[in-house]
Amino acid sequence: MTDLNPLPTWATTAVLDDVERLIRLRSEADPISSKEIADLLSLPDPPGQPGTRAVITEILRRGLAPIGATARGYFLITTEEQLDRYTRVLRDRESAIYARTMAVRRAFFDGPRDLEAEPMWKWVPIDAEERE
Image (tube, rainbow, N blue to C red; front, side, top):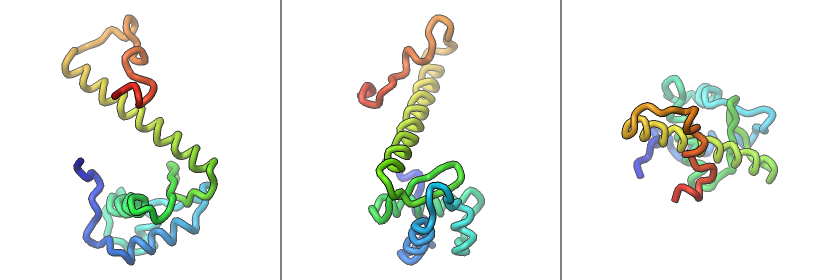
């Protein structure tokens, strides 16, 4: 599988440690944005902070910290309730991405659809296990 979020060359172990430390100081109620992280650490990251996001993904991949995210930023997951809530968000996003994938494929292969006759929810699986 291709890495869609490659780790930038400036992402040293020290940078990973610094980013992890910043996130460990934040709660779900007070998350830190990728822009704040990049600014506080003077990271050479372009707008949108793709490198900072890649660093956070790498921290997760290495199992260094359970990091959750909201639209406002990142935080350390400290309770099972937070973990369950964030996992639901990720599953909902996964379902939405799969629905869009299917819509694009159907539009390409089948052309226009009559959604009154065949609503989208009838042909998009609800559960990821149904896709296999």
